[in-house]
Length: 197
Image (tube, rainbow, N blue to C red; front, side, top):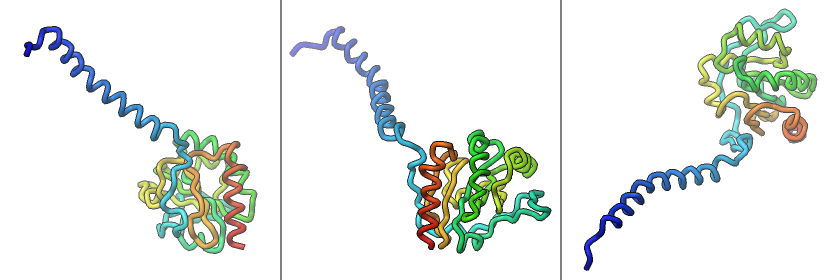
């Protein structure tokens, strides 16, 4: 049996040095193909078909409509009405883009639009609504983010549709856009309205 040569030893060292790089490349490719090409708005929610979280949220301080304080969130407010619940914040860039669309959607009197203001200051939130118009009949201030966790929020903005039975019927992750408002959101609202009639 012959002893290993210096050339064999050098080749083994090169392979051992390249092994971590090859493993990293293989893992990166695996993650890319399994996670990277998915549409984040299609992430399923464990809350679909379940009652809305029984979380009460205080009203957004100083937010008024027609001279009266806009109420905070009470879980009982969802019974008997189809609701669109939007989780938003003044510091959220996509929230600025979707705000005019939600304001237009608020003209549909068959639904109530509810806002959960996520980790925001009341002054900034009121300025945001003053800039775009307030589509919300109810706004809860989730200053510490705890209620949003109970709603299963991954990040703002997110929009939920709640049926008349008080159960979550649909969840849209990401912003409401001109592309998805008619084809997705309004279609899901119509389904919820038909289901409860």
